[in-house]
Length: 380
Image 1: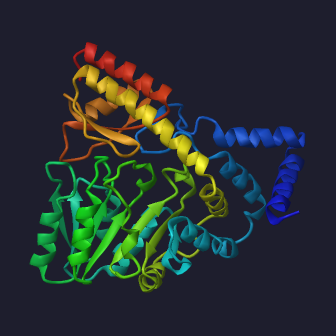
Image 2 (image 1 turned 90 degrees about the vertical axis):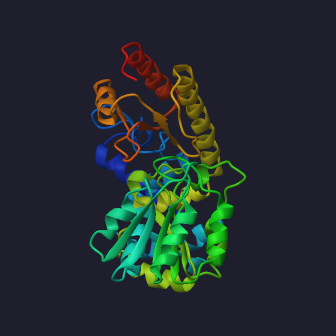
Image 3 (image 1 turned 180 degrees about the vertical axis):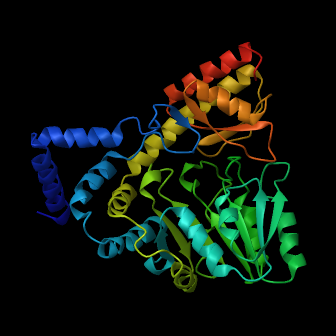
């Protein structure tokens, strides 16, 4: 019996003994708990507000979580070591180019902390993912926010000007695709800047939604990491693999940069269930295909409804979308809350837009019916 089979037998035997029920029944019960309506909040409301994968864990990842129960009393050091070559093989780099964290947010936190220096410019889009900004508050950064351009892409020209004007080391954060807008910045434009930039300009490229993009003009910035110690790519298991609650992310960078940044990662922040689910998910291409198919169907439901109602929206390359509303966003959010659905949040300065995360297609039909009812009352 191999290690996986041994662990599975031990885990199932443990839960069966604890419950006093038949082994098969207890296994089915645990599997059902892990897969039942993963997009529902504890109060029963429908979660369409956090860009989560409504399909949840893949079947093989659920099985891996069950198997990992018997290892919950162990520290993760030995098992986490398996992640580095597995991730490296998946993305086409060497194991020494990879480090892990508690979600990609910890990767961002480590970079923000490790690279800070007095009055160093931190240059980012507005709006964009807030965590990089949040992690900078306790550090002496000079924050530079650059509005998105007319395409709702990063205005790389103005961001580049900010680094040149500073005449000092700078940190640039680029979330691509961008959250909350779901829009793309052409990869060729990012490549051009990285090619020309001095090493004193450090790039954090957040690719949390990388696997969801099906667009020929988009590719990863991983291509730069061997030659450019000033490029970090941050990715996560939260989105395509449905592991948001298991907190597993990874950074990809030059080996010297990895050594520098990983010393800012909390030791032992990864958990045994997340590690095993991550290893299993990397082998499950079918789950990615199923998620993409579901996501495309849900996007189409949303876009058809918005077209029907004459509400504009930004092009979406992710599992969420920004659309126009003719009401204060907080009012819109509260009205959907009364209907049992959690949607978006405030994303200034885009005060006439709301963000909707894609659930299952039937969930988006429910969202659509409610939006139509709002229109009939003159609310959107």
